Length: 281
Length: 126
Length: 229
Image 1 (tube, chains in turn yellow, red, purple):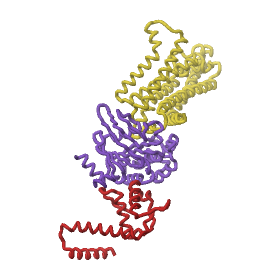
Image 2: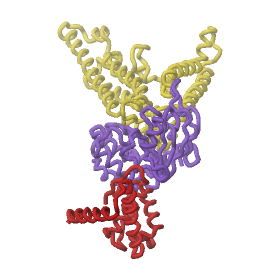
Image 3: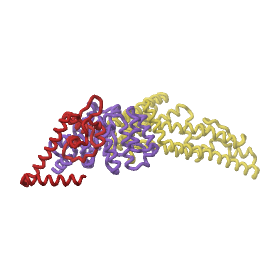
Image 4: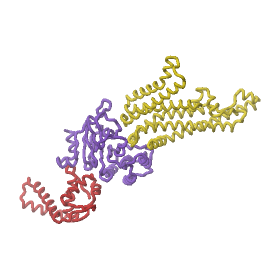
């Protein structure tokens, strides 16, 4: 356990600079975006109301009140999130391959640590999870800051003060990354991140197949991933094929929970086997 | 201390031989303390096992002795020293005879040559 | 004792090792000799389970390797196994964090012996100093067995001499050492035992002093016979 925590700490440390840069980009982009969006809105308001003589009521009716939603649909908001997600997805590969790359192959050291090798796998996965959750937490904080910014910049009669969850709930689907990364219900949150983390485990297992059997391993890895997804999504596939619902939503949820455990558990089990018996430096 | 080792004789024998020469020539005095096995290995750049083996051989031959945990010393036995000198000189003479035998040189001539060369070399050394 | 028993290794269709057997004793320096690509590194990797063997068995003190074995056997590969951006001090800290067998006193001693600076980054060290830092990280572990892959290759003559000094010191005394090399000349009188490899098998296994004593042959003589004969 102790070694596991040291490994997690080590893995976080290796990426912390890039991670802080990601966080910095997100913060800067969203805060600048909020300021510019509020500013544009106020400029428009000045133009319409003071230059063109439109009434405030008409302006609000026509352009709507400004709220967090204006920011959440903008690229100032979505680009850095997309970027961070992309970087973390790429790093999920690189977190393994970097140990094999170059002359100073660190994988020698990792595999020779006097600790169960599965700890390396779990530590790398945990590092990814922590970094993902860290960015989510940062986003929640940022939304609060942005909400305060809005209150400070725009008079009350021109803005709609939405709570954070309210603002997310108000998003129409597909319009913003936010609906994906911070779902409004706890169950939904569990589903999003449960599936996400399971995918990371499957990906890691596929990578270990490749690292164990090299060229042939790519096929094994892809094969493993396909099987894992088919098993996990089997209930949905069955319902789509036969065109009817066999299970109540709660039953489906419980069944999916069990399948999640099966798929995640087997990924860890297979990885443990590969790390101990098959992996090669 | 420096020995140039050849690669075909056992290293431990070369170490023992070196010690014998040092003792016989008086460079090591009787009863003098000698380096530990570890120090010797380090000085001669040899494996500690080899140093150990050399010391064991010398101890068994009575050339060195160790009392308790004290450092090893050169023997104090004059008789051992005399035997050693005899052994080394006889060995050298044997080799000389073996080397000159094919040339078939008369003994008087050989002795004369030895005398001349020996004095010449000693003169150079002085 | 490290026992390698009839080990084979295939890379694809290529048989790199075709039934290699030898033993390496504690307190002795065993040298695996063979030209490049003969599978020396593969054998060392196999001993510490960094690559699986196709068949055969490897025992360390009569037991198969487990995670605890890494506290009593250390492998020093031919390149340093630390992140280049780490400072020497950080690399030492990493080892201390994970290994109970890490001996900090000895690490400090080695640091002085090799004249390395703690604050230097590994990426900024010369080739010779990287090799020394690499050696330091392995030698400072209080382990019974040390495996070293080509500790003398590709470094300057002074570093070589310094590293050779390690073999004559208490740093390896009483441990079992296996080193690989394709160049025996400098270290001939340092080693206890030779395992000559070629074409994936052991050509000859012998004790160096015994070979000199009984047959009057140097290691190089034997190699000449074996490889030319």
